[in-house]
Amino acid sequence: MRILVVDDEKLLVKGMKFNLENEGYEVDCAYDGAAAVELARNGRFDLIILDVMMPELDGLEACTRIREFSNVPIIMLTAKSEDADKLMGFESGADDYLTKPFNILELKARVRALLRRAAGAQRTAGKILSAGGINLNTEERSASLDGKPVELTAKEYDLIELLMRNPRRIYSRENLMNVVWGYSYAGDYRTVDVHIRRLREKLERNPAEPEYILTKWGVGYYFKG
Image (tube, rainbow, N blue to C red):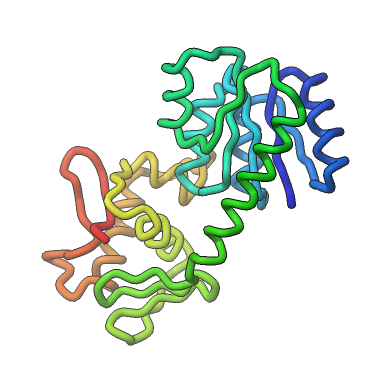
């Protein structure tokens, strides 16, 4: 199992890495929120331990961005213990919360519990995403409509999989550009509109009156589900 530990306190990171590796985990480290997002986007992690107070990008914003493209379990670390701060962490997408200073045995127990929970959820999750006549095979990265194969480009597939995995969640064009094309992409946001139009042409029975790939005017796009 691979864990990403993110905190700007390097001695604390060193201690967590040492203890987690002694438990048999593979541990990667980062020291700011921006690096955490990039590592989470480009690497495959089974769990992330993420501090709230960090430079570049704080842990709450980093958690929010990671949640745009990943459901990896996240434990938030903070020096604050107020309920409002914990609620902010959970609203950002955290799965668990630990207040500093903490007992390393408690951290390891929470890591084990979250990994067990995630493994159970993964066993029950199918590789097929379906809505109406639209079907995605997430292992083969293939799509079909009413049982007939539909050819999608890589970005079209990435876009529709993100929307179908998060039904009714509204994404702005900026969000979709950041998640699907990457934060460093310098293209025009109208690229998103073009891809949405193509997906409707390929996956909606009547592209002029879509049933599933919908627009929230003035806000963004979402999948009805």
